[in-house]
Length: 378
Image (cartoon, rainbow, N blue to C red; front, side, top):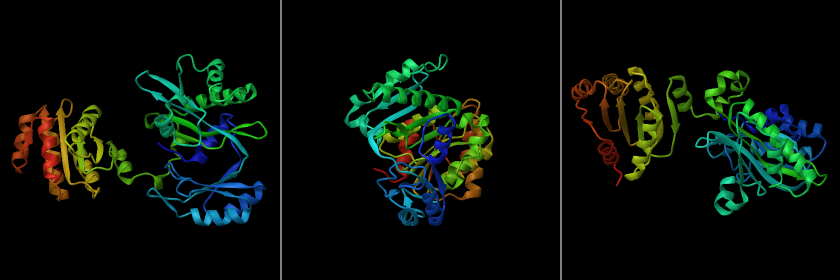
């Protein structure tokens, strides 16, 4: 789950990370009022779940309350990468002398959190990794032992030479680790972490992504979910017990099991297609899940074919076949459907599909190539 910058800053502040004061507003009049209260130059920052806000014109410097009013008027309602700005953060502008990057994610191969820091802050870390990878420094943290001041200071020295700045950065890094672990986050980052002309180190931006699997422990964080900012299909999939992520391709994929879903998308790419989604119906044999999956896939107007790839273990092939037939009867899809079913009750599933003239393939290569063919790709 993603949360907005102002919400992430609230979490940072609760853990003692220094952030500039500010308030989130929804009207230009409120923006002017907050700027007057702050009493100095402010930043007007769009609050949307997407990067590149500054490049899109969604972050502006306002030297006085009137400028804050004008910038808020321009930014509110702006479309940034398909998301409409409904809130802006009015926060104190600070005098920046340097910008760095500090972030922490889960390294699944190492089974540990890993810090990444770079003295090249203020730009996408992916760009730094691509152009100057030698400027990114990593340190894994043992989750049983936690993070020590020694480890935090070692990272701080990758950012600054001045021991006073290193000490401030080390404290922030320690607190960022605390916030990350306490929130069950999958990512927490400060970009940029800045120094001021007065020698302060501040987090002037904040980003936290929360692991959905940990939300049951954090009803206060789940309450921060912005329904307007989330894809409706992903919300409906979550409510239906499906794992769904929308992509930009045109082959709709309905698969059981996350590993098989990833392998299916890889194979679609291998044969020259583009998957339109990741959709895992899980281990349930409930035919209604298949109907719900088809509803979600068919909302995407880019989809030119639907690919079922089912390996029946706990999931029964005949139940999936029944769900496919029910979905076709109820939804009347206009795009072609190709199917691979193998495993538990496979023969019964084939019989069900043959009654509605839907043949089922037995191999992944065959069904993927067929999906690309009927979609008119290549």
